[in-house]
Length: 102
Image (cartoon, rainbow, N blue to C red; front, top):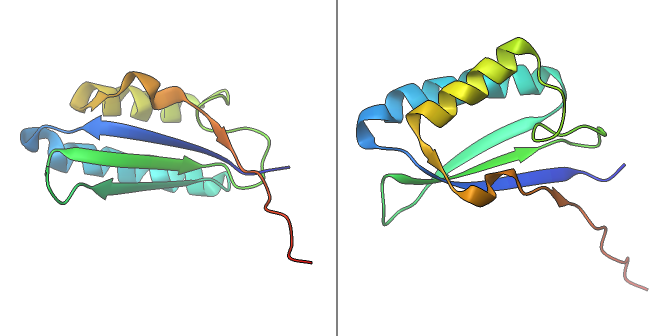
């Protein structure tokens, strides 16, 4: 099963940054239990602009399409209350293996 990834641009107002990072950390811990990962990166030129990456590993369900537990759903809802996610935040990307050198 190929890995899946979402990459979202997120605008986090400075006054919500601490809370947003806390909620993201809680979500990352829950996802880790499911073999998934969540990373966040901040723009060097715009401190309120972030990239959020979520990877499924080799499991068939991804955070963006899997039936979320109530706890995960609540954390997802809270993230979207604290920040503005680009409209394409739910785009799902699937890994394509590169051909091996011959």
